[in-house]
Image 1: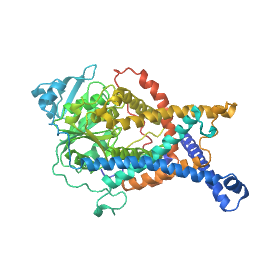
Image 2: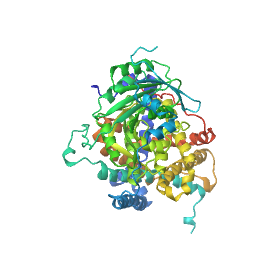
Image 3: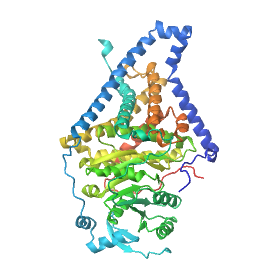
Image 4: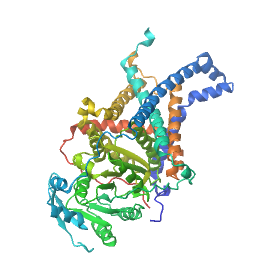
Length: 154
Length: 427
């Protein structure tokens, strides 16, 4: 296949889709920017804005930020450290070691038993190009018919 | 002392905020570890132009693989899908198309495809049986030990099958899933899912592989060893998400289930809110069905390696309900004077908000760094979705809340018959 699989055709959207998705984008971007308000306040403080100075310094805003970041860093380190230690331990412990035996491939006899077919039927099922299958109420194979191999089926 | 007293609402509020936040970091760390340990290309191939596929190393042998494609009313897509499959670079495969009681022109198209190529075989089911039964039927109809199952709208990259099959050199590997990439990017929802498959699905799968167990293979592209499938009784017809179910069954029987990010598969995602909701509700209900079915393994020491997978999913279900309670209290607090212990001032007050915003940025940046090699156009979509992790958790909350009662009220013997989902805007 030569054509690239991507489909990028925004012009195919209906007016309703454009409006809805535009509004959703705007709302989420606004919310995401709102999350940054304290940082904007810090930036404003750096630039000498009075209100921000009150928020960050007099009310101790940056102390809170520093404490919070410290706690977050510790938790993230503990979680990430546990995962990486566990992964490394397993890599080292099981490198070149396979405790479980390689199972034998499933045999034709086992397949026959599971799917309720004899050897000849299974061989026919597995070698016919076109099949028609009827199932039971429970989804088990009930009947399998070979179909003529040429194309032209009603 | 009074400073250290927490009310139940404080605990719920903290859980609703911290759980997704710290999970994001766990995924990022796990994914980066995975990249350096398993995914980073060898030296000669690191400088390939972006989007240029890395060539898989030659295998010692190329055992026969049957590519199974269940189809239910797939007349529109199946020819493209088969065209991509026939272009696969893997040297030893055939294709088994299962027409699962389609009512459109699928039957005629499949017959024509079979007439055009000796590699293509066709099974017509007399009636729609659901994906699990279609796959089980295909497993009986092929002598191949390896099955590669892909959805009828999924376009498999030329080297994907070789990347997947390389894992079967280890005899304990029962299944490997590939890396689905969203094709349709015309609407906001399409673009969001481009990012989601990278920044959420891709990160989670890599992190879970770092740990050693995965929650699920992607049903859209996964290879299986037939011996392993036989060992677990194949796919379960009564499970809404047969892919989650078979992943758990295999791992519970100690088969290794893996993820191969280099095995790309181009998929179609829903581009309407209704379509997305239906799809996610099915995934969520199916996940809870599997959790409910396997709850007993939480008490089995032999299954201890599945416990973290179980714990993670259980915690995300609990999180959805916690978030619901917190949101209700917050909205109620806007209109009524609530007692002191029940007041929620804000979800993201002060620096917590900055932390959430930064985490979204980091999560997107990490996934972009890991996935950009596979997807030329992804960067454009990422621009639209810096905030997507927030939307993901909201969608997750709503679907989980609805899914839990649905999963528990569902008759456990009821057959799951899927219909083809919304597949977005098409030219």
